[in-house]
Length: 151
Image 1 (tube, rainbow, N blue to C red):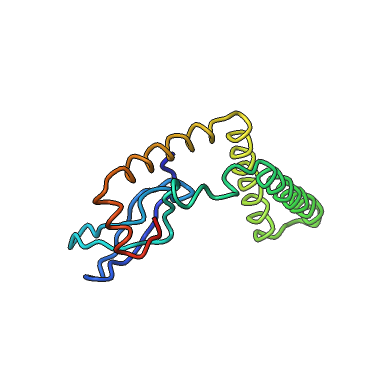
Image 2: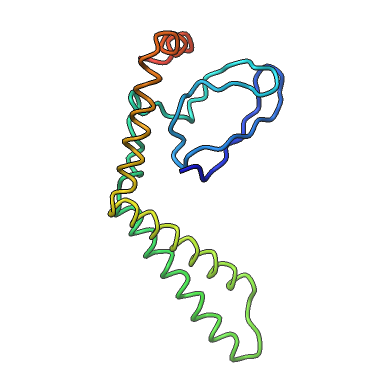
């Protein structure tokens, strides 16, 4: 699920790089600059066969609680707008908070359903297989060790 982008600056040539990633940044922690082709270790990425999955990624209650809190904020903002609009106007800031809270609640509910319906588990299986395939390459494992990664 390629939804996010990550940016980083190459430590060698100082070029700003941007690449797509999954929302939990699962993949090889060895990154390569697109400009100078130098490599470095980026600990933001998780090699799931070693580091494991982010505990929040499969915690459905985390997303359900988030959805409920954000929905409550959106409802409060909606009530405030109703009370303010009776006086002839309303605060644009409250409207924006309400809209973004509602969108955040939808995002949390989407992730809650992905976990409950098993789609997240299928993605995790795919990430684990990719990680194990990378770790079966002895040159890749040696690079990880060279960068101080405990393999």
